[in-house]
Image 1 (cartoon, rainbow, N blue to C red):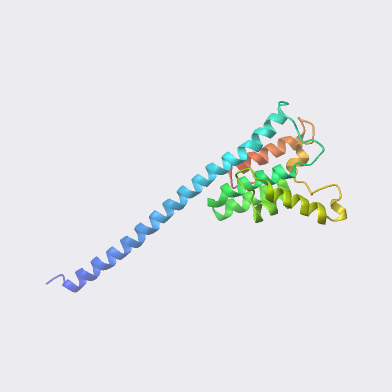
Image 2 (cartoon, rainbow, N blue to C red; image 1 turned 135 degrees about the vertical axis):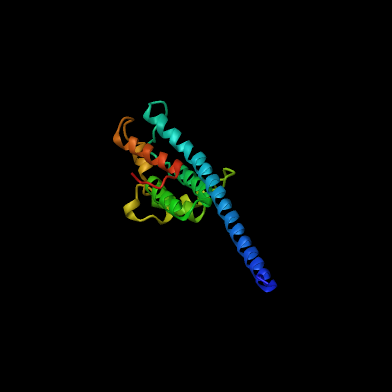
Length: 181
């Protein structure tokens, strides 16, 4: 007898287990890919509003930043982007975090990372954070909260290289590309 029943049963069991493991692995990979694509779309949507504002400013169609700081709006925007980026992979998330920290500054970024703004538009947490920062700021920040590159660039003239660079960074944030240059 060329085939023994024990061999046939063992082969069928091993093949079934291997097929089950590979199928579940493949489904898991497909689900991760779908989550990442959905997260990329949400990040592009969330980052698009600030990109539109910067492009309009560069074209002379929108206002820049006044002398008073708008770090609260940067905090709310960074919160939206960070919440949208929750499904991204580790490397893309790290690159996005680096870019956001450069754009909005360390204070707004770290606060958005620790406590994202509410999507309903409630600024209760933001008002509490503003009061806390004003009460406990050091002498080196007497003029306000340390700003990011976004705030600095939107105070420059419309055709300046800083505005062009901030638009380039905002495009990279919206696309969640892996390359920095």
